[in-house]
Length: 202
Image 1 (cartoon, rainbow, N blue to C red):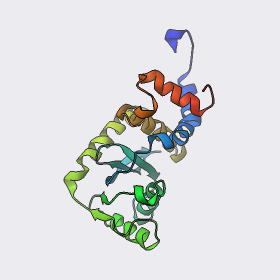
Image 2: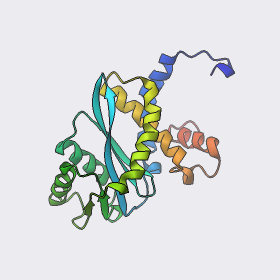
Image 3: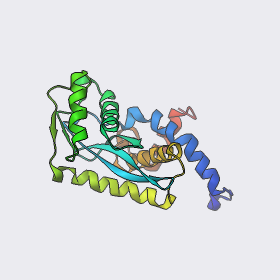
């Protein structure tokens, strides 16, 4: 902004992120949602909010594309069920995975069993707890946390979730998840895609 002769305080950038990051994530959901993937990797990582550790649940495909994410105050059965239900709900029945790999936390297995009984998860879905299969997700956590670290901690769950939504969408752009919709135009294609969703130009 300085290079363009525009003075902007860092708090202005903060307000932009809080206002627009959730909107961008919502408006681009159709575009960043991965197509049918036979296998998901699911795990949670830690995020500090107001001096306390919270839990960021994340899922990626075996190819590394982000499926979904959810910030929770707790790490328990209810949180695991909310996240898995949210991720599966975004997909039609034939698009849902055949396998989900998690760590050995018992909450995931119980949550999936409950979702199957409620008809919100394919009954034929296989739940695996093979540790090395989540290595790619652990590395993906690390890339995201490199963006989170300079924030020096969040002050509330609302601001944390809004900022993380922005980070996640920018990571999806970097991963190439939205490449089919930018038509090989690089950064300008990304800008045009976002602008179209906000009706700035066709």
